[in-house]
Image (tube, rainbow, N blue to C red; front, side, top):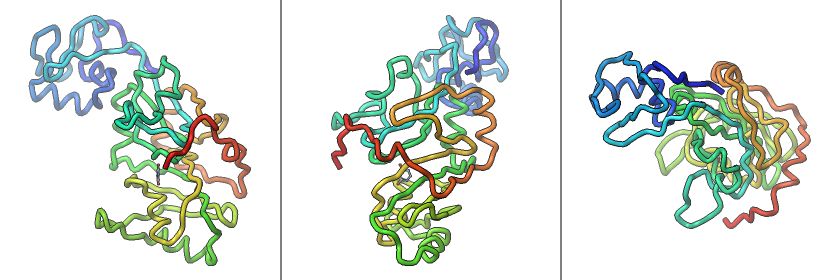
Length: 269
Ligand code: URA
C-alpha cells in the first residue's frame, strides 16, 4: 500500500491516485490544459496540490475522487465470473465475489469468463498502466488442461512457440515458453495479451482447453489463495513483479483448487 500525503502532493501523482491514468498520462493532460484545481486551470508541470484530499481536481470538467490510500490486491478469480464492473446481460462479475471494501479498485486487464486465476485490482493509475500496456510485456504463465493429450507433444510445443495465425486479427500469436506438466496439461507463458489468446491458439491446433488458469504475472505467483480469495500486494512486491522473470511451474503440480471450483458459480457458456 502506498500513501498519498495530505499536503502538497504533485498534481500528476494525485491524478494517478484517483485511478484515472498513469502519472505520465496525467502530465500530458496537464500540458493540454484540461486539468483544473479548485476551478483554476493548471498547465505547470510539477504543480503541487495544497490539500490533495479536499481540493477539487477536475479533468475535462469531471471531478476526480482522490483517495489517500493507494491499494493493490491480488485476486484469485474463480471461473464463471466476468471481469467487468457491469455486465449488460446481468451475469455474475468479479465484483459479486469481491467484498465491498474493494469495489473502488479496477482490474488490471482481464481474464475471460471461463478462465480462473491471478488478476490484480488497483486504484494506482501508474500500476494499472504498467500492467496492461504492451510495451511492458509482462510474462504471464497459464496452466492449460486439454480435452485430450496430444499424440506428439514436442510438435505441439514447437507450433505454439513458432506461432499460430489468428485469421480474425490477421496476426500471429505465439507462446514464449511451453512445458508439459501432465500428459494433457501444459504450462504456457505469454508476453502478449490478445483476446482469449491461449484458448484460441490451442483451438487453431485442434484442441479444446477444458481448464485454464493464470498462475503468475511477472514474478508474482498465485499461491496460498483459493478461488474467490484475495490479498493485499505490498509496495515492494509491486515494484519487483514488474522487473523479475516469471517462475516456472513445477511438474507435475498438484491442483487441489481445480477440482474444487466454486459450485455457486454456474458456467453458462
Ligand atoms: N487466454 C485466454 O484464452 N483467456 C484468458 O482469460 C487469458 C488468456
